[in-house]
Length: 273
Image 1 (cartoon, rainbow, N blue to C red):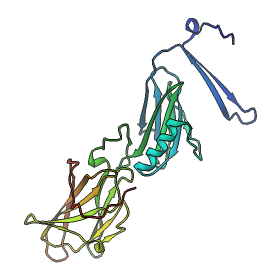
Image 2 (cartoon, rainbow, N blue to C red; image 1 turned 180 degrees about the vertical axis):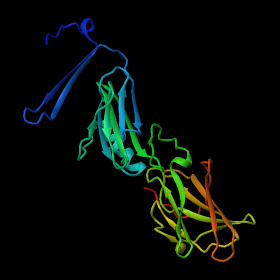
Image 3 (cartoon, rainbow, N blue to C red; image 1 turned 135 degrees about the vertical axis):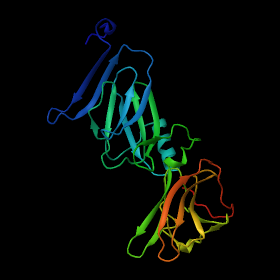
Image 4 (cartoon, one colour; image 1 turned 120 degrees about the horizontal axis):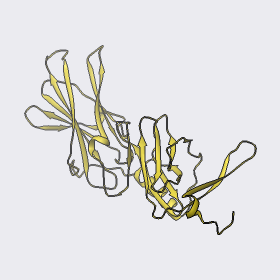
């Protein structure tokens, strides 16, 4: 192509792919555009189970990613993208996408990863992870901000119909929380009793399980979780209504705190990742 070709006169965008002759594997591509200021956005298409990286100009962005787990791990990987190129073992699984977008398919859950969405010299580099409900993504665009509790922490009951045993599982985001969650029992008289470690299965995980003897004095199960790189805690709870004293029938409902500064005693041992 003549280097003086006036692209403004004939088109706004052209893309040239360099592929292998044998299997047409993409090696490199070049894009030219007459569009000026660029803006990038990343979103999740729930219907097609794909992440879309889109540009305002209509150019197809390059999407690169490297897997990570904890917030600290992801921040390190984010810096390697900023300072140069991160090595990743597998390229993204690209799928069809609207004009101006690049689509990346995640059919079996979205792994926590740092994504780099690029058009020309414009890039957006952000950690991405699933929310705790596994129905949408969370994008950490601000290292100081933490999503609402309901998106990163939940409590659920595990029922055993044979012996009416009830266990309570607290699930928290590995990205946003340290381990060593704390369970508490709120009594009908308003007092609160913290549960000992011996009554908690998988204590040092991000999905600990409380096993406790239920009685009519308990009205709520509370799970406290410590935020990573912070002195703050979040909590989520499940209300318990026991209608019979023996082989009781239990009614359950959940709620989460909207107060990011909920705290548990400062003398507890914390693990930070």
